[in-house]
Length: 234
Image (cartoon, rainbow, N blue to C red; front, side):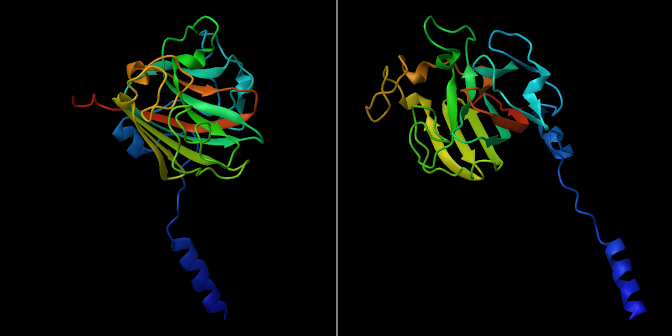
């Protein structure tokens, strides 16, 4: 019996170790593929308010960025055009947040918040799949389903912006695929229904800032990574 016990110990010692990826770090493969780490897990370096003011370190909470409370959203300092963005998010009860892309300019229009200058991928504490639910292109395109996990659990969001095409994956499921060129009428979706924005979304800037929205609730973001894409073929 003692011999068998030693055999078990030897086998366990020889077994290969499974190394899990660490939060807020790039793997060797990601570095090789050109990914950039947008949040180091410890500081607000690289992030600012829409008015380009510095952020308090209190926004960093247990290795995650919490945009609440701030001036509408935490804004990454670089502008992004065609790219893939991946991040993990977790929400609090009744949370209303979102990830803004191609926000331009950062100067808000008179009487409106800076959100009107960007495109928002909605993140909300709901179970439905409408224009304002998780995975929606806010007020413009519904997700096919709500793939978000329950409040308090981490979720994975992957956004791809390639010219007029925007796709949204939540927890590995493709829930939205949008062609902005089809939004060619002022204030209307492709099906003729009205949205809240006073423009033809087709004309929205194809380059701008990434933002994490504060809409009055705690929410947390980590493992924020992006990779620029080559310009799409006309």
